[in-house]
Amino acid sequence: MSISPNPKRTVAELRELRGFTTDENGAQRVAFTPMWVQTRAWLRNKLETLPVETHVDAAGNLWSTLRGESETCLLIGGHMDSVPNGGWLDGCLNVLAGVEILRRIHAQYQGKPPVTVRLVDWADEEGARFGKSLFGSSACSGNLDMTEASGLVDKQGIKLPDALREVGIDFERVKDSGKELKNAAAYLELHIEQGPVLLDLDRPLGAVLGTFGVERHAITFHGQAAHSGSTPMNRRKDAFLAAAKMSPEIYRIAERSQGGVCTIGSCTTKPGIVTSVVEECRITLDQRHLAGPALARMLQEAKDASDKFAKEGNVKVAWERLWQIAPRPFNDELIALCDEAIRETCGQVHRLPSGPLHDAAEVAAAGVPTVMMFVQSLHGISHNKIEDTKEEHLELCVTAFDKLAEKAMKWICT
Ligand SMILES: [Zn+2]
Image (cartoon, rainbow, N blue to C red; front, top):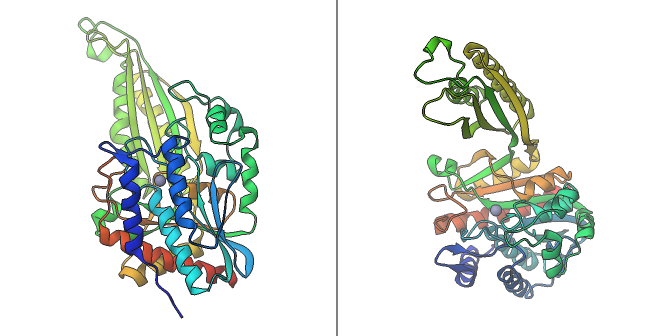
């Protein structure tokens, strides 16, 4: 006997959630706030109709467990928290689709699926209040930097450990959350794409290959300030000219990398006055790629280009790394199953990397085979009240994600 999930119920529940967590500016489910606590209570209420064991772990992640024949676990995850003035789907679509899948699996296997199925609502995925995303999942994976996290403060000057105590979490113990990954054999996460790729290709759903690695640097060119009237063009040491040449160059670097992206996001000049040649020009460069070697090549090419432009302009250049994270490729076999589930649901599929980080990246980093499924975002926009997805696509993604969960259970059993 095969039972189908009820995707219309998921859409109705998303609307119900929007009804009490959204104001005229968008969703307001910021982690560790009263609205977030209320959202969680609403979620637990939904889960109460199922024979699941529910508890909050040491890092504030909410776990609901449907025991199966085996202790080996299939994990499904998402996050109920939002950014301030956020969209109605980011994070909670994943969780509510997971609730529907638990219902379907419970009904189909009369409460005893072949493997244990666990739904996790990660705490503070967005990092909206303390400026550090993936709090709950990075505590669970063990990657959370405790020294850095202990010093984080919100706009009111409240420290993260104090905000956590307010909601019953002991900061010193958050990494105990790691024991939740015991017996985890696969992790699945559904998410809105938050970008325009599927929209432009006219595909409702995509299988995600992994999350991009990121290299973030400041590049400073040093020349010489000189009078804009008295200095002939051939005598200048113009730091801005050298920095400006980087702009078209990063487009060529991105194109050669086949799949990478590069952004110069800021540019500041000194002395920064209208009558002086620029002495110092600082730009920032953000480079991302799914493949580690390709990302390293992109970085080297940018460094080589900066040296060349500095030499041409008779200026000096210095690099400073601001931040870096390795690519997190997902599991090949699970990607193939995700692909298959999408094809069976809507005939066509596209494979794509994820530019944004997600909790799935942390679970993958902890060594659990992981895959994500993306559903098309209208306007390619998220973290905004206009974030939206067609209703038919929302229904398709629940159906496809449920098929993926079934395939993953079978995959775990073989
Ligand atoms: Zn999200």
